[in-house]
Image (cartoon, rainbow, N blue to C red; front, side, top):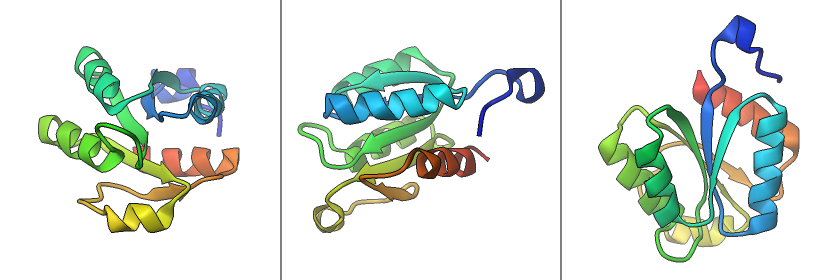
Length: 127
């Protein structure tokens, strides 16, 4: 789905967090092409900095298994500051993610995903 700013207002701002540069770049490209404004972070720590500097972020799309602050911890930290923020998780290691399972604030998209899957879940998450 392409975002139409004339019809829908300003594009939603999405923060993409993934420690894998290629995966993060792909997600950013998919979301940018769909008409969203995209910010990116390679770590949970960097995501917190960007989140605090950009109060217009509407959705966090985060990998679960990352060094340092993982996706579950990141979501908890951000939700404690802004309970209304939308969270969408992703992982290639669903079994390991379930072992680490903390409070889940949104759906989990399994890697590898198709662009249409990401676009659909983002659209649903932002409703």
